[in-house]
Length: 76
Image 1: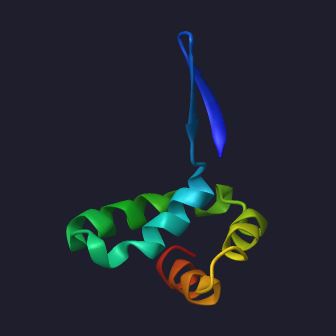
Image 2 (image 1 turned 90 degrees about the vertical axis):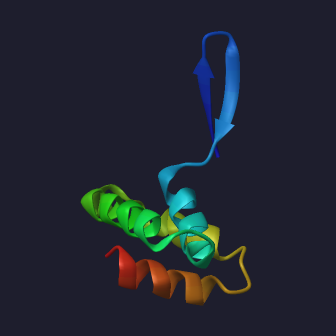
């Protein structure tokens, strides 16, 4: 989680690694075209993603191995 300051307000937002995990978790809840577009954009920044951070986040999920497999197959 990151904090972003906009004017006088501080807003907490997920970083790109956590958003990728949320994408993998919810891939069946969104339309195929929307999902595909997001994955394509993640592929463009794959070299900038912190894999260690993704692995740390996934330790908190009971299905972390499955999510990591989805991310590996779809993005990397």
